[in-house]
Amino acid sequence: MRYLPDGNWMQKADEHTIQNIGIASIVLMERAALRVVEFLETYQLDTSKTLIVCGAGNNGGDGFAIARLLKQQGKNVCAVFIGKEERRSTQCQLQMEIAEKIGVPIVTALPKEEYTVITDAIFGVGLSREIQGEYAKVLEQLNAMSGQKVAVDIPSGICSKTGKVLGIAFRAKWTVSFACEKLGTVLFPGCDYAGEVLVAEIGIDPAFFKDRKEVCYTLDREDLERLLPARSANSHKGTYGKVLMIVGSKGMAGAAYLSAKAAYISGAGLVQIYTHESNRMILQQLLPEAIISTYTTYEATQLHSLLNWADVVCIGCGIGVTDVARKIVEDVIQLGTCPCVVDADGLNLLSENLSILKGVKRELVLTPHMKEMSRLLGCSIEELSKQRFQLLQEFVEKYGVVCALKDARTIVAEKEHSPFVNTAGNSAMAKAGSGDVLAGTIAGFLAQRMNGYEGAVLGVYLHACGGDDARNVCGQYSVLAEDLLEGIKYCIASTKKGR
Image (spheres, one colour):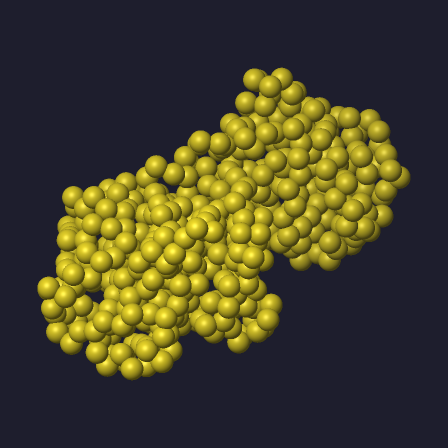
């Protein structure tokens, strides 16, 4: 796993390293500059004529140190100071003076020349205000220039907390990020401006962020082996749980099929689909491994019997928003006792009466996309986009649920854990049925005794990795939801546990 601190938490980690560990600030800065120069060499960038644009803070100090190191290698380097001398940090002033003494030309306006490499060291992770005036003009000019573009720690103009462009931002091809990748370069649109992010170790231990619930984290492929639930040689189908899929209204057999098959693929022992009668024949043909139970009208006795049978319930994929569906959703949430995943139409019906969540003791995992979440919150998508972490955290704390907010960067939140931010997946997954596969995948993990938060995190990440593998096989345009199922199979099989 990797931590994704914002600027505020990164500055706290800096202070901890300096004050409690005893590594001086100037040492951290020297290491940062060395890592950037090493990157330039490793990637074989042509540094024969390098422009480094420096601000007045410590990010600018990094820039002057980089300029000095390149100068000492005999490179043609020019440093541009953008800012006011009286506002320079102590370290920036020191690095600027050293650079001047060894002959680095330092100017205060962009030269009207072309450079092979352009390095942005104007603003660091602490920037929170809109960029205006001379700074905005400089960034506009830098973006228009040719040459390979490299950002130091974070592209200037990107908010380290939200990924928002603060008026204008530097467009980098590479970003050399110190200690950890910053949250703002994972979220969009910051991700687009950062280019390829390379994390450089400079002496700040990421373990500082352990148990800090406010700090987000993400996963890498090698984490799958650790996270997948264990399977015993001495086991049977009952060992891995019974999943009740309440899915598929008339004409929506596809949602039922995809979600139920995903539960099986992720490891559930037995899946029963409770669906509209019109779907029976096609589902029996598509997924003969599943038990099929059906309804045409609301049948309380049958529903309650099925709830007593299940170890996990998944409800909502393609069930519609009819009165029958509404009554089923209310009963499942209020009367059921086992963990429950709520998706799609189940969320839309739930948004009409959130009061039914109050007092619910069982684990609930909600999997809304942005529009469904805006309905649950009673706000616009624009408002949600601006404050997604805050609004999501307030929601899970109020209702005691786990929530996987689906977007280009899906976030999994729960009141007792740090937010998980998914960095896998791709635009090929933006197809009908993808959400059904995710809901079923999470339900399958809950059936294997994972708790709601862990099952949601693993389900989201594995689903996204499956999407990456499906894209590699099918291409960017042609991935279907069923290809995601095959991708998930491959991801699990590629781990030691899955073989």
